Length: 620
Image (cartoon, rainbow, N blue to C red; front, side, top):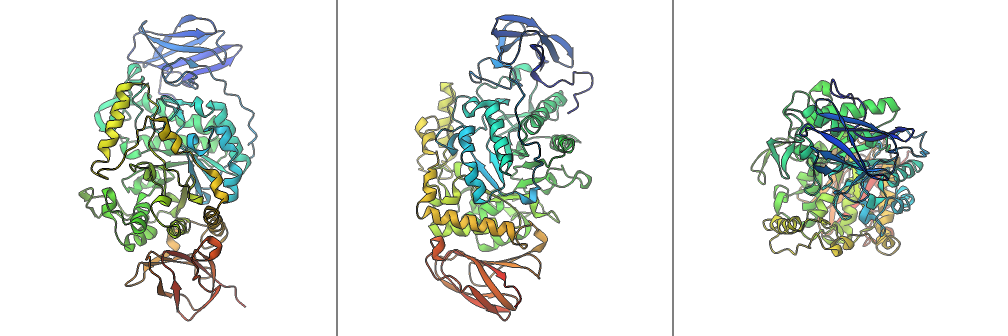
């Protein structure tokens, strides 16, 4: 990124420049003086030089990687580096000069087109018993065998303690030491690339966590002109916002250039309040795409948004922000209501199979319609945006973890419904995302957990968590986020993948992903080649994908009772490529015949809650 005019172009933070020397650069316009206090290996204080627009710089001899330091503001307060690359003693302790050299083996890796992504979201702390990057590497071969193509890691920026979802990060440049620090994270990304897997990182630019957040002491990183659910908004459009933008964009570039991530998922962009003519999100996307061009790589920027606003992913030339994709929660909500019957909270807006049909056709259910939950209209039509612009899921960390009990879908619905959910998501004309463990029906919850050190904050979080569910799930048992046992309950039981019925579900997911990646009708996420209808008087969806010469048709029964569905099918012979009712997938029986003859329609006896995928048989 180009630094704002008149200030050093060197990267923020501490960077070793050879010969045992390190350059320190910090933005601290609120301070009259700034010093570097080297606390190890030799205690000393070095004055920094003001170099314009609130920046302070120093080049220090004998401060090689491993040296620990704090910034001293106005000769008194000492704080960690806001752009620290390593916080070995936590968010309140000294920063450490971190080496950036690494023996990468991925020189031939160029990334994947977004249309080829099958995302697998994981939390490093609960994905394995050890909760580290190195332990997660040991599971990558199993994920590759499953067929996923991109591993999405929840935020790793240093947060208080060792247990957190990651959205309370306060040292945005420092990979958390509990996971293995910066080199552990680099090993993980390198291992992904060695297996042909893209690596995606969840980053947070809409807020910082409450504990250890010292940014406001350095400069106007936050503004009271806007508010968010977490308090004052990040200052991306007010006075001094150029430097705040620089901080965030340098952070994004660090992850894709120094850590080789292939995509960034931007948390809750609807909470980034921006009234500028050149939006922050556009500037960030342009910087990341420029880095991709320099490295001749495919690097994507994916937004999480609850606004159903296609402008996020429209090209800048068409008045958009130029991001590559966004999460579309509407498909999840419509599918969840159909499978569980839950109608509380935002689920009150969703009902019948027609909502899911609209989500599959259009990307959004709400594209300008009135929302009862929001008590207003919201959203806009997706228009001609391709399916690769939307990420969809049956489960993700938000939708599971933001329940009082953190229940996964496997705890809420029968086994057959899990296969229905998988079938809908993995044959949808969008980019699918799986949440860790869903492929074998992991029973462990994914609860909200923390390890704050401030007793008042701990109690406030407990109280807030109880209050949050008072209007959603009154009387629900809300586990204590601070209790280590809450965190331990969330760790996956990976060995279950080899036991019935989990193995049957894993095999079903594996075959479904194989079909998605190999069938011409399913491989491209093409919205313009999908037709969806709900059979009259039923809760049976018929989803047609692909071109007429090589179509695929999914028949999805959401009724618990068996039914005989009269399905319109082009005349000819059809093959049942995958049927969830088959005993091979732990089904109840009643699977469709392997070969179906159609004269324009065919009556298919379907058991309750079932997914059937039909493809046209080769000409004889």
